[in-house]
Length: 575
Image 1 (spheres, rainbow, N blue to C red):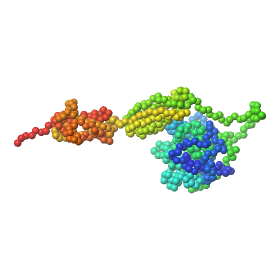
Image 2: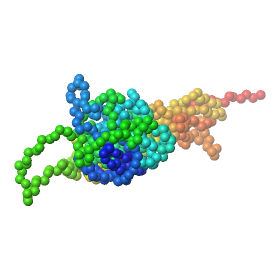
Image 3: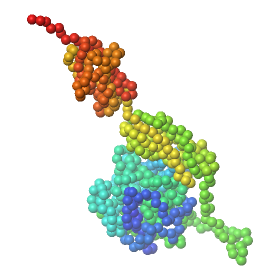
Image 4: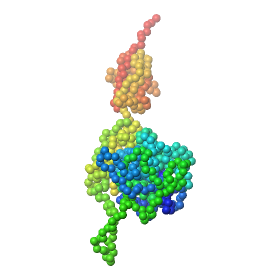
């Protein structure tokens, strides 16, 4: 069952049940990349006698929720170079077209946001084979959604973890307990955290193979895993299902698919024969295959996946002399331990080589790009080093594309350059960190500030009254403040009455406002535009016949002059 708890496995009719199943689901806050006690090195599989805590629980009964078949002994041939020849191979190496496309698309998507993980689609295929038999042989529609639900047994504590309903039955149809759902078998609570929209339809559906494959890929890449390393592959698979037997089964299919696959039409994929439950029947929602387990050899007879069934010729006697006291020459080690990375190939420091501007206006892109060079202990550039750029602080600031964290691999010159940084609508400061996964976790950072948009244009709106008789009022004057055509709200503004270029506060000259104390003033400096960018000039009084200018200015240098006319009051005649 994907990603959250162990399962029980039956190795064959002739063998006894192997204890498995971790009886608690991992919480969403736990790191899926926690190291395991069983980690293979250099691609080797764990020793047959090794075990993890999940396998030591002992005697947990219940259905077996994942396929246990191993790949055939014959190795698929990799396709040839001719595009005109049909690609064929063993039935087990065939992967349904939509399912295969989903795995490859997930690999490309993850590579675009987490290149350092190096997710191989063959690992997704191996897990998909074990979890659901490649979506029951590719029984999916044109959008990649399974034709009928693929559901695991109820997690009611009877042989499995006890997980009460978390989705009100939305995904699994069960309002009492959760069940694993879809081709990659996510339980609803896990899907709530890791669900993805892999096919771009605006939905995150665990029954869709594109969505499920991308979610599984991101889950396997959690933390700082590098899936080109065998140890990280083991950790990732064990985080998906903490069982040694599960790990060995997935590893076998991973190796098999790496040796070659071919595409088959949807709905025609080979279905495993191993059990998905002890007592499958018509009422079981997962529609599992026959309950008859396929026999497997005893541990001492278990062949390596992909090995030959043909007898081998006896080897020639060694010409080498025997060792001291007649002992035979010790056999060569099965693999050569990988040497520690050279100090010249590991980042020990990061230095800034390019930067972004300190400030940008809300909604715009910061000028420049953040760039760093990874250097080794000896000072030389380090190529192929994964550098993680992450933004903290102002929640509106993101890299182009909306991401807050991206991974960039350094080039031959040791330089990694982050994507452009875009300011959101929220003002304030943020920090951009650059981190390297070297022998010491060193980092460098860039700081920036998002400032409010400032108007670049002020426009008089409506049809206000711009002529008044001395003693009357000017009112209804409204101005629109915009920046590149968009309204700018909450910015300070200033208004004043100008008379022939003279001091606007000169007494007895032109229209005026009164303050709270009743004093006359010809300037106001505590104005602000409204949220919609409008500024309503407070009502003021006409005085002194003549022509005047009402000048309105805002931060950013935008200014608008409005001509006002004050007419003399009509003459009065005596009786």
